[in-house]
Length: 280
Image 1 (tube, rainbow, N blue to C red):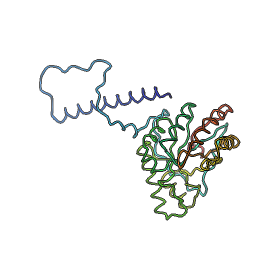
Image 2 (cartoon, one colour):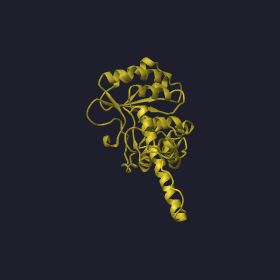
Image 3 (cartoon, rainbow, N blue to C red):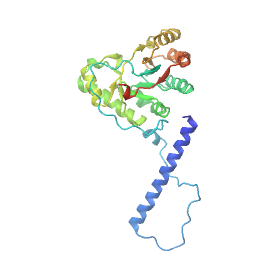
Image 4 (cartoon, one colour):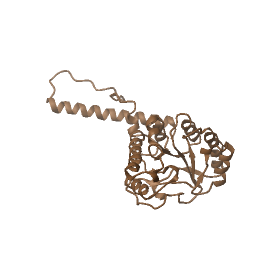
């Protein structure tokens, strides 16, 4: 769905909501005050017009329009796993692109621009403190159909923390994601890929599946744009989950690499999509 279609759909929904609210308010006044006094008839609005009510500019964030239908209901509690999911199952040349540690005001918009240019959806594992600092970027992810996952609040090594602190890191991030994205995250990724039983249990308690990766671009080491491209293209295969980053350091190489390998993967017949529970 194009941005113009999204804006048209949003305006239609907001106009309809305003009309329903106005009608309900009028009915409540009539019930509370009895029949109105006799007087000249009130003229109806012109055909095709809808009464408008002021709305908060950020109200759309609570019910984002992603172009993929109505928001899904809260997921059922998944089973407690003993290891994370490393790839997606299914047929065809399908891959996942994932980005960790953001959102970042310098790099994330450029990644989103590239994904939008090629009409590709990706998964962003956000840190709660970054989502809180840059909520508009998380809202944009929702509007453009991307999946937002939980990557803890401060990116700690979870295996060195007590259970209560692990829960706090995960739960607070799920709450901020729900606030600005419109839905609690269904996927979780442990920082540094460090998992233990408590992490799996608490993630399941919060309704999240653990998703790791198949191909690590190691872009956080800033090995050079060409090296990042080669690692991703050589690792491309059906079901692969690619790990990259959009924050946590200078991610200019990650941004530039995406612009090069994304069209090549598409030209090679790969379908780049987001994880869905039926794949697990």
